[in-house]
Image (cartoon, rainbow, N blue to C red; front, top):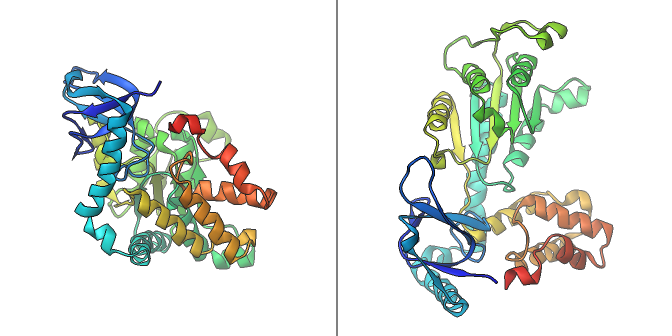
Length: 355
């Protein structure tokens, strides 16, 4: 049976949550390491201001700051909050969807400009942070492909590589070596394991250093390097783009904070956090207008219907992201007449989970 909890005193990422009521996902847990207080995990999918997330950890002083309330009180609170938001947030009411799309597009155009700057060696490195599924990788890859158009036409090897997934320290060393020449760019996409590996972090910091010459060293014996004929040191003159879902400002570990601050001091840091559900939906509209669904050749009317279907069911979808749009477009390609039914069964939470 679903429980509902009132936050008597608490906060989420610096925002006061006192008086707010949420469905509870996980009961109160104390902070570890001797830190006072604790947190409760709540369902925030029906509220704006949580970066499009379905759940969030609300920090509270102690368990006495939480009160169990009936479902009816939650429903009244939720409905009243939605009315209040319309009163206290006039900007969202005054700003039209088209104006908001222009605002979001202008923000993401900075990503395109910075990626171009790294590809043309005007900027050495950039870190791009933001929630998953908003098009960080899409924007960077398009910009790098544009810069490598002539290599593609000539059939030459591209001067950039998108590296995704797990990455060891020796794997990082090899990739940086492969793209060490000026004009080359290596983009690490969702390789967050690097940030938790001291050796890999030190290599990354050396690659991003602001000194005129950046020399990377591998000072321990390595059969991998010997087998591939790679040197144990080299000069790195390429560019680096690091794409992550981690919001650096919210990292709690002091040790990791120090490492991340060292990285930020060596390169440009672009935070593409999108806080509201409305902005996430408009970002989807903006990217679709830019041609993300062109390969499906579904026609303008069908594309508009598909996007409207996503908007109408935003609170039921398992996630709000560009990946979800592509999943539903794939279902349309598979079965145009019943893609919505398929999406309801494969992309949405069961009705019972929403009650």
